[in-house]
Length: 166
Ligand code: IDP
Ligand code: MG
Image (cartoon, rainbow, N blue to C red; front, side, top):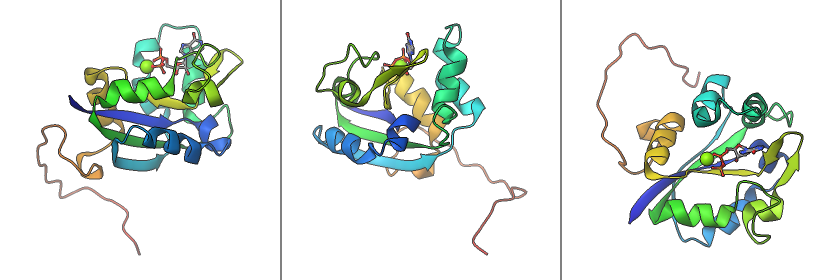
């Protein structure tokens, strides 16, 4: 089944210069990267991204983690991977949520650690097709993705102000 999945290299992955290692590991899947960007997640984005965990005692720390506040580095790398069974294959390579229980050869098993109340597990990967759709639409606009994944509509906004190169 052809699928798309959201992958985010979390701030600990960036601070520890693990992006190259993580992308190399993900390249084993032969999936295609169809969108990629550096992003500085706002609190609103982080809260929406992890909305399913908002009742958890570690939620506030988790939001700070995704925003980069725990690592003093406010950036993440967000990507969309596409191809056969993309969701399960990326999850498999990522490994279990708790890095101490993840397969030692998995990405989280290799690079993750438990620090404070949070599993610092270097990578996010969508869990299901509905979650992948919700997350991809949260992180990316249609024109930032090189394939047409979901239906779009065209809106013309004459009064929108945006920055352009001077
Ligand atoms: P997932 O990232 O494997 O899909 P989720 O349950 O969606 O796992 O949790 C999102 C993130 O929240 C995890 O990647 C991890 O960083 C953190 N997290 C989840 N459960 C715990 C926990 O029990 N203690 C500490 N951090 C957790
Ligand atoms: Mg999850």
